[in-house]
Image 1 (cartoon, rainbow, N blue to C red):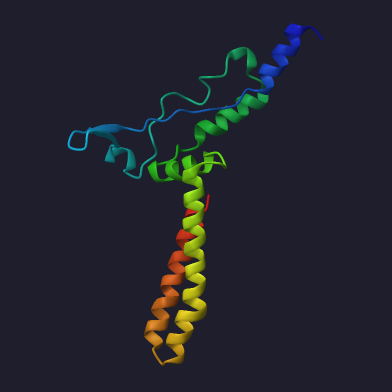
Image 2: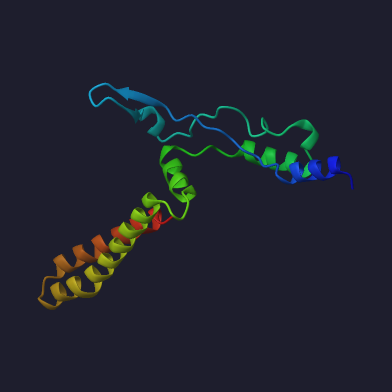
Length: 151
């Protein structure tokens, strides 16, 4: 194998289907900073800057990459909420933000367990059945939130 072929093989292996999205920012003149424009968070898919095939040069397009590009083009881009989760998930393990999110989620899950096991049980034992039911409902809402945010 020649050096040229080795380089081409490595480049072909590194080919991946990608997409860029627009996140609209607006200037907050009161606080003198950039904020995310509410249009970005309207619930609809984000706007793409290009198509999934734009970064793959024609000479690197194999039947496999063409199929992957077609599959990617059929998918909706994430909306703003989904992008937030994707960004947190993509943070490196040593990220202080990712650590903080993990700690908050762990504490919330622990509180939901205590709320169910001890607080609601004590309310139930004291005959406060509606209070106990509300506490269990709150614990379940916390668990759902933890599951949603646990990236």
